[in-house]
Image 1 (cartoon, rainbow, N blue to C red):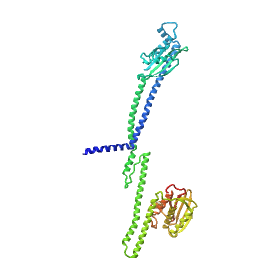
Image 2: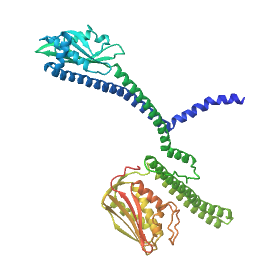
Image 3: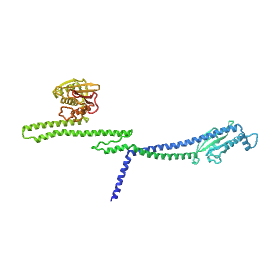
Image 4: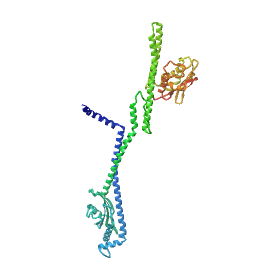
Length: 506
């Protein structure tokens, strides 16, 4: 039974394992490398083969030209100068005479030439006198170069120099490269000197050399492929480390990081991954803190409500007081929930409803609304005379929040001022007060959710979301908010918006 079950499992696991193997980046890079090398070799091998043949053919043609050059030099020395060796050759062949015919002299010259010249293998010197095959440097001629052959007869009729290649179907011969030089005496062609070479031998040598090149290339290719496989593994090791690290990461533990080694794209990827994990860890920590703070803020009014309801007696007055307190706590919870919903909406695309806003009129309206927040010395610093495209209601909400914050941290004799002005490409609103001020260490932290200044002598009734809402509204417009403050002197909150419409949330 167990054996049968294992046999059934093998066809399932085997393809999955190979599919995973071929799906790895290392394998894909390796396969692409092999394909490119194969393509390169398939294109280069024929080119190398043809190049070798051309080099061999070029060398043979140079040797043929050397033979022709030697022929011309000897012809000038032996024949035209009436050399002694020519006289001796004539005497040997035709006897001692006073005169010899030009044909006899040419035949004697060819005898001297062919006897002195030592040719390479498969190279043949052929002498033709008065249209007839006279003699060759070798008696063992291929039939294509023998007397009365088609090629020899075509050479015998030449009056001008000729060179070319004669194709032969016999693989032992290959083709015949030749140079034919007519011999003219007193303007009349009396003979032809031919240098011919059979290419089969050189081509066979080229093929043997080509085989060696292929063998060496294949051996080098195998070595390079193995090295490429090892190099790809080392190159992609950080990616595997990244995968292992990513799999090991859990919500409860985001501290895992990848060791960054060297430079380049892989190191940059590892650095980017670590930076992303830093942001994720910070975001998860912020989320946990938010949940803990929100739970604490909700738990307090719930505890108060539950405690008073449990202790409430039958006395009508006591019941009325308890109901009033409970309603107040429920209202505070409702405002808290509304603030949370507002912060969540700030991340959505429909958070803003843009319109053209008259900044001067809006500033005066904000000043009028702010004066109702508390008994302070209210001042209007300035009102910009311009228009911007923004969400009027969200701006009002943000500035009123800043004014409410100023009221909570000032006394009745302190000054709170509101103003607006254009600064370059930005629209600037501000709320200035002469209250207790904010410590430098708290000036960035107070815009976070549930944050309160540590030095504040007065505790506000809110949950610490007001300034977070102000920042969310500013950032939704493509702007920002910041505070400039000193302890004991006061604080100025600046709410900055771009004058040009922000192509962000709508």
